Length: 215
Image (tube, rainbow, N blue to C red):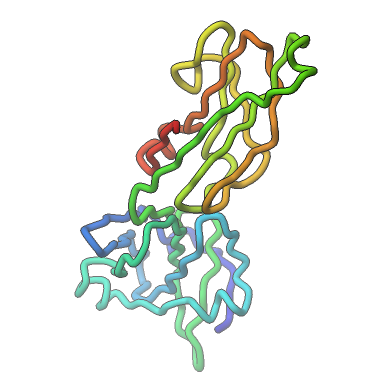
């Protein structure tokens, strides 16, 4: 398969959406004029798409006839995870079907195949030195059912009481991605009268995708 650069805005894939119905998902988009075939690719949400040889081999050719027959691009759901789907316009040539490299983001969508649980716990790290200090050290532990990018969660500290949301205090980002299972985050130091909780950072973007619970 060969790749050609995206040039004409009239041939772009746009208005991509997803609908999850029981054990199946449906990806739908607006077809450009004079295009009746596309390539569909899927990656884990944390992975970047580089269009290397391995990724190109996984691309699925999909026709407008199939789209109409199945009311979109349809896949079975086998596990709870987050994926990123890409739909690229395709062009027929003499001996190949070319992939049109569209990089404006309108042809991609993040899909959650369920609403995974994220658990967190915050414990104070006790030490003899800490008895005489104005500060305290905290250990945040996060347990996740799926991998998460580091920008999904944040922790917030507030003086004299626990914060009630991600705006109620000073917000801090985590410095590394979160993997499946138990993640012990680097210890943090706060004042003894400061309290910390973990929140979903962007509610509009991620609020409907996860359930965050404190242990």
